[in-house]
Amino acid sequence: MNPFRRPVLLLALLGLAVPASQVRAITDAEAASGRALVKRYADTIVSVEVVVTIRMTIGDRAMPPRENKVEVNGTVISPTGLTVAVLSMIDPKGSLEAMRAQQGGGQKIEIGETEFKEVKLRLANNTEVPAVIVLKGPDLNLIFIAPLPDAAAPARTFPSIPLDKPATAEVLGNYYFVSRVSKSLQRTPIVRQTTVLGIVEKPRRMFLMSDQSLGVPIFDPSGLVLGISTQYLENDRPSGPVVLTSADVAELAAQAAAVKPEEKVETTDAAPDKPDAPDKEAAAPTPAAKPAAKP
Image (cartoon, rainbow, N blue to C red; front, side, top):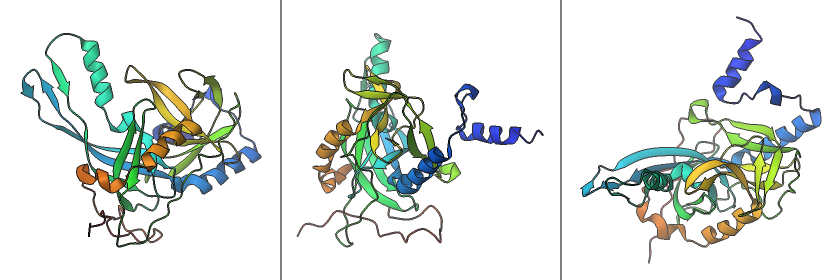
């Protein structure tokens, strides 16, 4: 086997290969910036794990519930652990309703509210933190998840990204995103270069990138956040990846932060903290967080 083919095949299997026309050698300074960003922010990228249940009624017949376990990347945006992810990757209701509308006639189809259970955040050291969905923002296609409080343990401080000092958007400027690969590849953090190809001004300011990963932030070389990657929804259906500004995300995050997680616990059946497998380097898992008992 040609020894030069092996790295290319490996990149293709990892889903990281790019067209040859887009490949260019990066400078030592660019590489150093990327390494510094992944070292600084890798722990802010967590896995959001949810069991999602959808109920549908076709005509007068209630269909069996459809249950699916979802695992997506999310970004911690507050030291309290408030995390943002892409709504359409977790809750399929909008897409199902859009498909129903396009089909037109036929039997009447009703789609019930999505139910969420076993919501948790999986941290960089594989610790599971019981959590709850506190806010959905359909207009921005974002969803916010917050850890459940544990009255018996000290408050946990989470590594998070700053949204209060946004990066400046410059077409063809140099940016990076930090993400994590799938569970089968041990959720290894990765960093990639990207650039702004265009700036959309209406219905809101959004950035079109040469490369991105949903649910994670875009950084400038100094570590300022340009925004969060999501899918733009057209008639409730994903039509293409965009980056929302830090200001738009922060505005919705302020609403999410005002919601008390324990008040949303009725649809949560979170598992106790535990790592996927023993890890000598991982921090010791904390006990399962539960809402404080009322006196």
